[in-house]
Every structure is written in structure tokens, then in C-alpha cells.
Image (tube, rainbow, N blue to C red; front, side, top):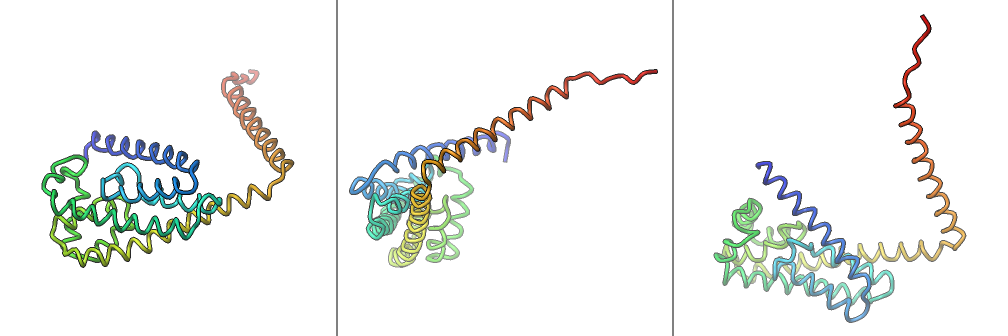
Length: 230
């Protein structure tokens, strides 16, 4: 890979991370029906609309779990939304690949992608199991459904492995977010105002110590060495 290619890839990952962080922070402000709808839409769009290139679906699933852990939504309902959205979204991606595959492969970011070529090869060799494995790989999760349609994998085979992968993936990532949300809520509730103040004071003191030490080291570095008497 050329230097330009490496730089382009790094910029893409940095941009994706920035977008993911911004959307995750934005999602945490929702609750109830709005939270279910937004999380479900993002999980659905990952493969159906290739949104997974910019926002991995597990981010939305984990955020949904965090909201459940914080009491903003129901955990069982959120898991159901995530699982169904993943399965239906992948099915739409399969249909799009089946009907518009050649056109899609000529568009960015699929055109000339080594990842697409490797995923296609894996689907041709392994079929259904590749669909299941792809559900747990960030890049593959966005393209496997469409590529499965392109290579002509039978929909019945695709749906079975897709449903199994969507179920395990959806439950796992939503529960992960739920544990994170519950743990954070418990920590915050257990901390009194005095404890928070003590932590803040300790943090300020630590920062002041680091700054003072760095300044002392800089002064020592620029101080001229004392010549020994002759």
C-alpha cells in the first residue's frame, strides 16, 4: 500500500471515530420511543444503506444498552429492537445486492476494495457460515449481506445464518451496554458530593504537580553547566 493509501485510510478511520463519538453522545440524550426508533434505524441502516462504513452498528447497540442501564428504556424491548433491526436490515442489503450488485461494486467505497474482494471470496468458499462470521466483523457486517446477494447465495441459507448471527450479536452488544450503563449509574449514585469534591481536588493537585515538575526539568535543562575550577 502506498503512502497516499495509508494516509487516506488513517483519515477515514479518524473521521469515522469522530462521527461515531458525536452520534453516540447525541443518542444518549434520547429515551422511550425516540431512543428505540433511532437505535433501530442505525442498526438497520448499517447493511441496508451501507451506513456501517461510517457508524458501526455495534455502537448503536451498545448505546441502546447504556440507555437501558440508565433507566431510559426497557432492556428486553431494546434487545428485541436491535435484533430485529439487524436481521431485517441485512435482508434488505441482500435484496439490494441481488438486484443492483454490479452497479454497487462500481461505486465508492466498494470499488476496488481489497476487503470486498476477500469477503466475496470467503462467501463463495463458505457460504452460510461466512454470513454468520461476518456479523461479528465491523467491515464485513456492512457488506456481507449485499455480497451474499451478488454471489447468488440462496436466501433461505442466508436468512438462517443471518438470523442466528443477528440474535447472538444483538443480545451480546445490548447487554454489554446495559452493564456499562448500570455500573456508571451505580458509581454516580454511590458517590456523595464530598467524595466528588475530594476527587476534583486530587485531580487539580495532580495536574499542578505535573506542570511544576515539567517546568523544573526545563529550567534544569537550560541552566549552563558550572565549569570546575582549574
